[in-house]
Image (cartoon, rainbow, N blue to C red):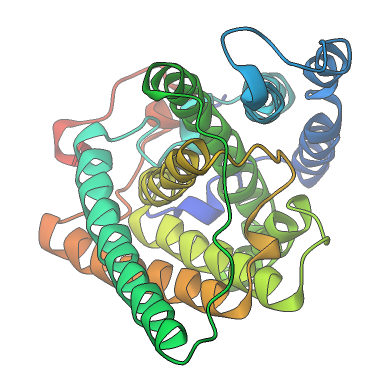
Length: 317
């Protein structure tokens, strides 16, 4: 990479503007193809497993392997970007060429608070509705679920949380990283790129659910895309996505839900609205925290982008 190219004042969504359109387009197409091809080995392995699953995972084997399949997209994507665009893959993480770990930790705290409050409100609402239904004689028969025991449940949960982190990183790197940067280089405004990556993010989750669920996932993608541009990196998106999916993993293990195809696109309208409201609240809170912490897209140097030098201390918030 030529050291004469200046990247002063470049925003996250414009970080590939120095590359040729052809190179960026080919890389983008290769990454999208990789999202289809990379999970195939794990999928083939899953098809050859016995119906009762692996001994350590039991009925959750298929669900855990589905997370592993998505996780395979991450190394493939990073390799394609490194070879195809000849740039440091750290520029997918942030404008300083790497993850900002302290900022990520703060985002995890904010995400946990927002999702925790939303969960409490949801449980209170559900309890109120159930009490009202019981008082009016409209209650239904209690549904049973399979509980595998505390020991096996904790074992499964360890696998799921570890793979959830990789799965989230894969989805964020592809959508809020590669796609947002590939489209963003064509426009000064970030909104076209934010919109395109949100639509593709929703499409990657399938169209098996209803409109409300798909709109909820779309709002999720838009909010996290805006936060990525606003904060100059993937940390805020990674934090919220991981906390939400981690909570889903806990609920799935506790409730014995083993369907690997279930996702937010199938959410009924109350849940879809709750998801959109929660991620919207998180976006506002995180934006305010970024302003208070001085988290703004820094002015990367050519050394930051090709990772031949380290970011300056002033840009390590």
